[in-house]
Image 1 (tube, rainbow, N blue to C red):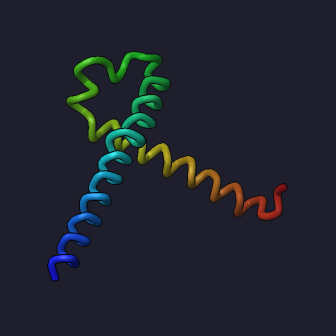
Image 2: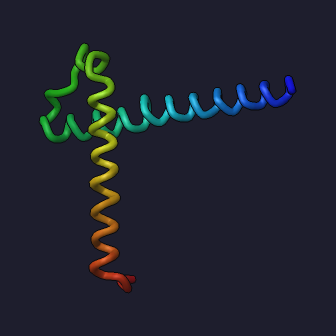
Length: 82
């Protein structure tokens, strides 16, 4: 019984760490780089990074979805491209 609770807690902790890493590091960095490219380096700077962290990460999600959609559409239009 105790072993099951410990195992559940460890799995939950690992999931939280992975999700936090993905959201705060990977998606945030993709969103930040994208916004810096589109605004020619003007946004996000300094304090804006911490104030709009979730919005910047959401841009990262949107970029990944756009790239994935583009690849999926291309593969459906050209199914046997080498």
